[in-house]
Image (cartoon, rainbow, N blue to C red; front, top):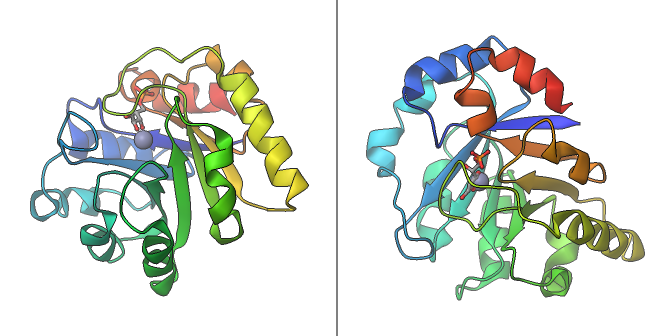
Length: 208
Ligand code: DX5
Ligand code: ZN
């Protein structure tokens, strides 16, 4: 299992990013919120860009925003492996996915807990990754939602039936207990469980 670490709940981002460099975590999960698609808002890119200099890991960027087309060019300039946008937005999703790919970066779609997996069908051939939200997007430290295991299974069957190799990433409330509900996933994104602990590597290893 691959692990992506979210620093949304971090109390000292530069220090925690440096500590994560010393672990075998696969990606740094970057949560971007605009105060519109979700109620909270993250710092603007111009303030955040220097913080990313503290990590040497590849970034897994999760755009919880109404208008990803404004953010994609900014995050494409970083050491970014994948940019994921939400399937629930009004913007032209195919255009946004094409924009991400134009930078030779992997693209993904994230799905809110209330959205059915069938909403992904029109976009499946374009996707490298799908983020199944296991909490309502908008903040770290929430409790893993029941029904996520069944949703991951439904998505796995959908991907198999269309022969789509996209990876399944589960995001929100992941710890050593809730990971058991995610055995059909490829990547687990975990924030508080790792960054609020005093041994990052031990927590990361417990999720694999
Ligand atoms: C929720 C974010 C998640 C979150 C994960 O809106 O997309 O990435 O930060 O953090 P934990 O593990 O604390 O739920
Ligand atoms: Zn996220």
